[in-house]
Image 1 (cartoon, one colour):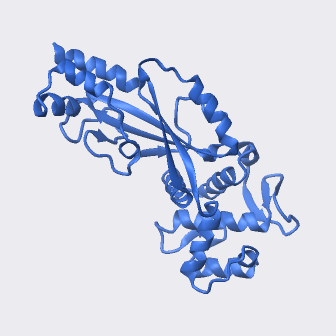
Image 2: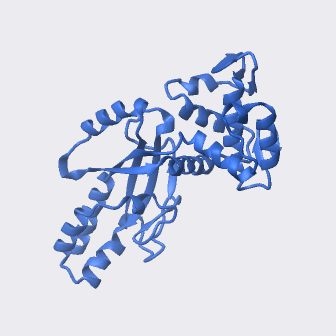
Image 3: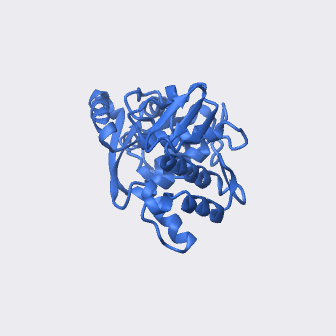
Length: 297
């Protein structure tokens, strides 16, 4: 499944960047029609009607691995991996996932109200999900959209976290032309920029390091951070000596328990959050009509 925090042709400019995730997948209409006409023995017109009113599930639209008749491809002219059908038989489904929150709810209601209702061009679904699961999904999406071989990813990861931490700030402007991020003991909280350097209060700086570690640790033996490559033990020692763990009331002796507490804190604590999925079906409906014309002929 292709995931991104930015890609979408629906206007999402009113949303805090950290509240939106986009998913893209392809559906093979040749496979779909084959199921309905060859296996279920429906007439092309009946198959067309059934497929037109089908609503894909959240799992089908956002799964890490697509299953037939859905598939993922970055090729310009892909072929279906199941039946080898060419591009003209494929429809693209774009899904926008919006995380509920004070900064996003008003914009989400306006967006849904503005969407055309004709022919069910857009499908809206709502789910309640554990905050920890949302946080890990955000980390996974972030990792997929970062080039960890580039030195710029440290700033990009920091910006992505700060967008979630303080969604009302225009962080793209703050980070424009930025060259480095430093902790500042002069700041009890918040941040300030001086020239090409961004200074963060120690607590926020440490949380940026934790996010960088979590994003990169699956690809290296040590997590990569602005403070260099760190093992989990080295990261925890740094957080303990800086006073961060004590400030969060984290006193557990085991590394795994400390990490669990940190993840709970960064994910917003225990509990659940509502997620809204907006599915753009316009390309699907247009392609479906074209494919039906071929079958009917």
